[in-house]
Length: 384
Image (cartoon, rainbow, N blue to C red; front, side, top):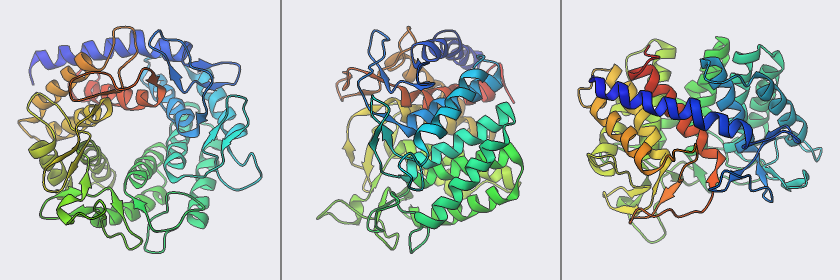
């Protein structure tokens, strides 16, 4: 590892700790509702007249809990208040089981769907609230939420439906990936084997998500967990995302560490395919690919870069000689093209490098924070 990479990581960490976290802890927080704004504009001002998604509240709660644990901010009071408000406002506000998808600007229910993706982030928030505060209620809420998933979300062929009231016809790997992440976090926070047993079940589904040969992780499935290609197209057109390949590679290393096992060969295959077709030498990452290697979405979001950073941290720890250079390229690309000096970011660029949206989504802080935290632990001052 070169000193240049350590300096690159230090610069990113300084931006996060000194500029971004204070900004999002002040302007990104709505003290009157004890939660967080959905978006800021490019002047750093809240865009208030928007629905507030449960996913954003849970992600921001996680970020500031983890950042507080690292000593990068002092947000214990904010985390406790946001967690309490999330429970009061989003959990069963209409008397039905589960967490509602969003609230309107007036605090009333905006979208009453119960979706798997957001429930996974509730579980992640619970794990880190417990780690930060020791509040046993966080584990009680986590266990109640997992019981709800078993009762109301189960798909007949295994795994879970996207929505509590949905059917099994359109299943996705992405919510399961974040459920896997949350279960690992709960195990790491408590040491309770029940969470690792549940993670084992999601790991078993990985064999259905993964297609050997082309070595891709499919995104969409039918009720039997058979990969779905776009309408009218063949199996070579099954969609995959380089960012998710990297995210799974990172998670699978955490899973192996939790079990004390050797590394999962699927992790290496996913990582290698991502860099074979989806990521250039200077860390340009397409948002979406097809199984035959064609780019199906030429836009570029910030979050795949953050996942490439995390994947390269664990690949470097595994002895991959290319990983440090790839991590440096991804961090450089992220800071140059997406992160702004004022603590904001551009979320997505088109193929010509122009921003596709005129706002800053709070939801992206989860990706940016975790990537910089992992890079600091792998290559920087916080090196494990």
